[in-house]
Length: 317
Image 1 (tube, rainbow, N blue to C red):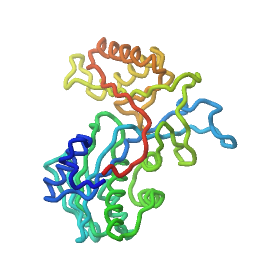
Image 2: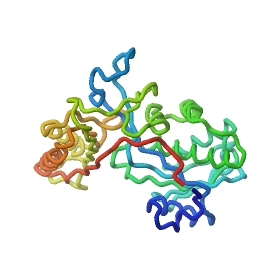
Image 3: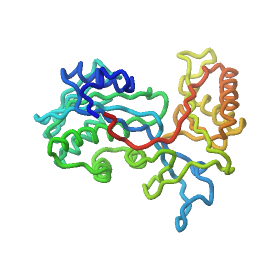
Image 4: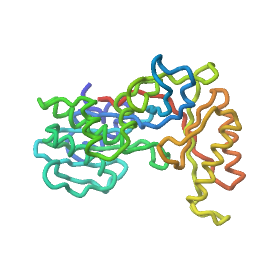
């Protein structure tokens, strides 16, 4: 399906329509295509019950998965070796940057996609350049890592736009190797972005997919992302960082008390968000317990976001 008329297609996803409209407004032409890539996150071993691992494999302690929330990239190929990049999240910070030769100075939000596209250009893929419009559907404060899905989406979009015009194709395993050698980042999360399957976890080394099971063998469990929010100022003198740490500790404690099987942060390091694995019938109780505990500690009610395991990056239009 063509992306040329996406902005005016009333039946299309409103977020993708907005992305296509933003691209056309900034570049005075419609996009060739729109791509989406899922936010990805780490899982604990508790999400995979003992005995579920495939026969002949040892116990695994690190899993990743893709969330049903996505970043978007609208793209059109160029032929002058330049990257013109804009973002719906940073409308006043567009950039025009060379893909070969000395690197240009990219805005912070564009630095990782720019580095990824320069790595592709150095490998002879997408050297002609592109116009890009990016969009992250979740705030960075939510806590799901953004860099890996954004760089993968940009790379896939630009490579495909040039492949449609006779350029070399980009295989996902090739992209993973290129990014791993050229752009600092989390290779396990990149694997989730590139190779995830709906309803399944992926081993961090990419070797096997595994359904998400309930530890007690019951119905499919729920995943809940809980993001701690902090007031701008606190009457008790806590710093925002201290208040966030207190909120995370409360979420972990209250979620487990309310019946969650496990709780952990979605990245490799602690942040302001916690992923909670729980029986579906305990989800409301967990929300109530966590919200009540935060209120008693004078913290704002956290943000709750239900997560389902989604598929890998793909062309949407």
